[in-house]
Image 1: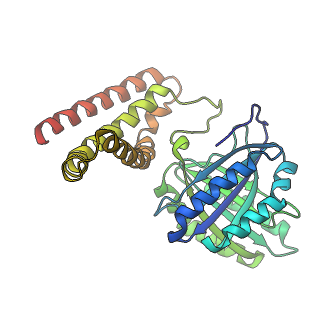
Image 2: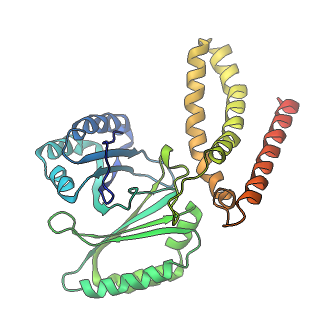
Image 3: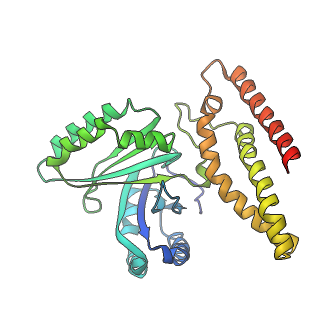
Length: 321
């Protein structure tokens, strides 16, 4: 991922979701790396973020590409260079890509912790009725537990024919509860006469999105809290992997050099911890974002709880391993 020295306050993101054949995953990752090098030199390019599949929640590859202006994004979408890259990737893909253009907020697209990107193609002449329906479903989903944000983007003439809605939830459970709710299903059925095509895809967060959050002031989360939660998940992962895999398999069975064994252990630990931290962060949201006026007391409570958990894990491992 590369960034420019200055980022527009209202930049434009291209969100691409694509399904890759399982046997082509490595080739696609390599292809995307080559595309990243190419797009880096395009005017107005700010950054690119690649989110690999994270089954069972996210089955697609998600590519987020940010540009300074809509014109810059349009230039990339229509460029011969991009068309050539797409042609080269076609044998690796299954079905159609979803490509959406979204105007970012001040800090860009934030699909964390979990998001649904819903695209809808409206029948000609029904646009006004569909917008009225959109206000109706927006009001209903505002009451859904765990909703963190909602974005609605109209079509971009000549580029994007679909209406795009982005729903951000704090957990996968809450997102699925809303998507499968009778209220939403009834509203979707109500809109069926207005639409030609309707489908949704889910995107989970990348490594840098573990703790990103939106609040009125845009304040970042305290680093010490983030570090404590990472340690809460990292310590047992490293310990258990070392005891049951690292020592008996890497060291005794394959006699790998320490540097190689340590590297492989770190790779596995980062992957597993990356899956666990968003889950534990959701359970500690009361501590990460305490109510105004209670920050100090809640901060001490959470820290004490985590210190107790650290101590309990150490004692358990000393007794059992």
